[in-house]
Length: 370
View (cartoon, rainbow, N blue to C red):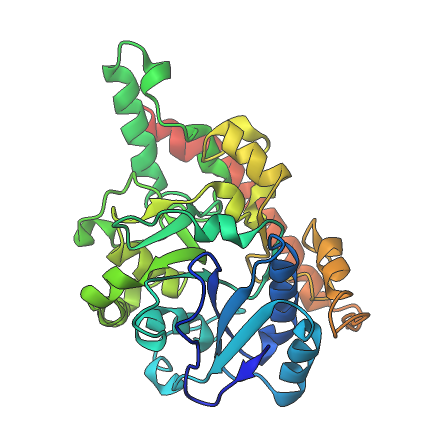
């Protein structure tokens, strides 16, 4: 059953504790991908399980909502729709493919009923390929959340990570046993060296890992006890000039040192394809291979989405295979025709990427190692 409500959450307390409760947030531009996300999630549930979804509506049209309803009508899923006041977040920065809906997840402790102690948060640009009950049953403990290391920007400060590994290796009698499972050889390929640019002023360990906020298990009990939503928004506004990657900045700052790591396969980001092999990956080789070759969740990160006409993503075909199982079946983007601006932008980005890798390999990190 799909329950649509205008402003009030109707999720009832008779939800079985073994059944996952999932939170999503989307606007019109992500309505069709959201249908793919939810359809894939419910189709991979164990037999007899039911998915309970709370959808934060940032501006989904009635026609798109009808498509979502049609997609899920006969499946074991219930959805509560709530429309938060976007005025709560409309002063925060947005760019590229991100709208203000990205910040709605930070209101989770305020919008879900008090008896819901934890919730799985899922972005609307992913495909679920394994049973979410496994994620639901993971113990969040005292952590603010469980999340996977961001494969694009895995370190708070990559140079500090490199230095810490070199110092550790020099001081160890058997460096191969004391080195971090992340490879320093991964650094030339990361997407961003310093996703929290003011980490020193904030007192955060620069060598620590940085997580992606697209897939999380949130500890709402602790969030409520410590007024986390207010702290997250205060962080964004106080550090406005340093914010990079939107909500993810605040989550990694406020939760620094107090989040638990999910197995990487639960959030396979697009940047996984930038690393030559598992020995040059920012996580343990075996975990990297599992994430790359057997993802539990395929996350279409970056602005190059598979529903755009240009086929930038290696797993674009899988998105359309999943899409054709929804009410949006056979939809395809129109060919915008050749654009010298688009061609130039794409090729310049690729050139800068290759130059950056070469620069980091042969100059910057050679000096760091001295």
